[in-house]
Image (tube, rainbow, N blue to C red):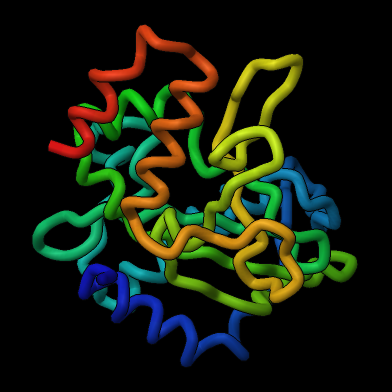
Length: 213
């Protein structure tokens, strides 16, 4: 189910889990400080991962360095340039990151259904003072880390009746109220039904037809 190179990367990271600790430092002029805040850590872990993967001789490509999009995907992996997304969250606080902008995801998957098969490499970290440690790593598909919500067939970030982003489930918890989808088709239907409920009948046919085709 997962791409071959992603599985190799995941296996190597799991083997190295006890070594994945350090800190973040910011320097300007003659002043250097160790960062104790969590803002921006996800981006730093994503950038670190790219260098780590390259140093470990994995076939990985950064689209941002090749003039590609700043938004998707984070990396291409393997000879086929399969899609790999990197996510990180505070292991003590729970997964509260954005998986994708809702409208952009609907549009891009309708035009490029392969996006549905992206691998998600997820880092759960702890930050104690300035000491950063990776506690857990997962390799998932999007339907394995998403779920319904009380309001929508797909859990989203919604403010004042406007849907902004697709939000993850608590896939790592056995006590979650809403369970993750069991297969890709369930996620696709939830995505469609959420868009239909949100946008209305004008969006009923084209999106679902493109995805199912």
